[in-house]
Structure formats: structure tokens, C-alpha cells
Image (cartoon, rainbow, N blue to C red; front, side, top):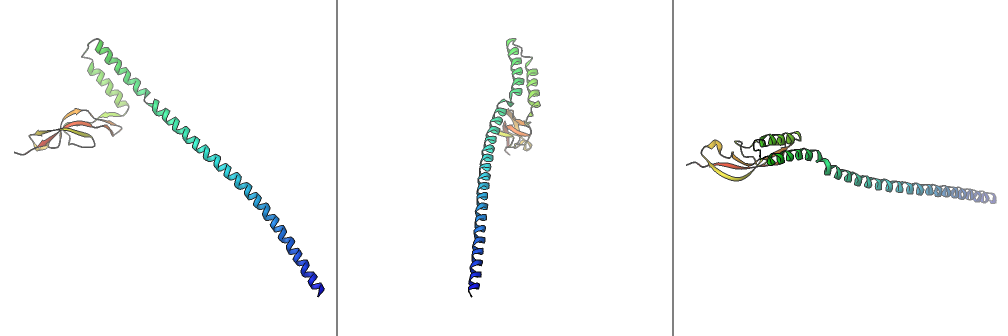
Length: 172
């Protein structure tokens, strides 16, 4: 019987040593996992900070671009202003149509075109009704009879609506 107890004790010692090895191995794995976790966390935090900084840089670049994007258009409009100055100095009324055509060409080149309003049906997306005027025919009812201020499109979107008088037909 003593031999059996001795064998059991030896098996328990072996099992305890095996458990000790397993615990030691698990602790080492835990250390590695913690170290990796810290590396991943700091890497993620750096990436997040880099992303935030990149977004801020992008916003600054966009602001600068928008601020100076109109420079080309403004230089072309300044050339027209110079032509108007010259015409006023020389009191030349006959050159104004050419100057206006020059302005319309610059605007068209940049995607700005006039809204045709007179005779068209009133459209609140393109027209702003300022006044109403009685008309003598039903065809002119709810149609633009006079343009008080020209409206403009910018690339097929309304930049500024036309200010108009709208015809109202009243039957006798």
C-alpha cells in the first residue's frame, strides 16, 4: 500500500509541476498580449491624431482655395470695369453695348447665363413676383409681362431669380 501512496504522491507532484508550467506559460502569454494591446492602442491613437490633423489641413487648404478661386473671374471683371471707366472718361455712350457684351461673354465663359423670363409662365423657382398687372388675354394670365431685374443661372442652377411683373387676367 505504501507503494501506491507513493505513486499517487508522485503523480500529484507531477500534476502540480505541470500546472505550474501551464500557469507560467499563461502568464508569459498574458504579458505578450498586454504588450501587444499597448502597442495597438498607441498605434490607433497616433493614427487617429494623424487623421484629425489631416482633416484640419484639408479644411485649411479648401478655405484658401475658395478664397482665391475667384481671382481669375475677378481679373476678367476688372478688365470690364476698366472699359467702363474709359467710356465714362470719354463720355462715350456708344461703347456701352460692347462693354455689356464683353461682360456677358465673361459670365458665359464661367457658366453664368441669363434666365429668359418675358412671355414665359411664372415659375417660382426662376422668378420672383414683385408686382401684378392686369392683362387683356387669357394667354398672358400667370405669365411674365415685364422683367424688372434679370435673373441668372450658374451651371443650370438658379444663381439669382428674375424679379418680374406677372400678368393677371380678370374676365369682364
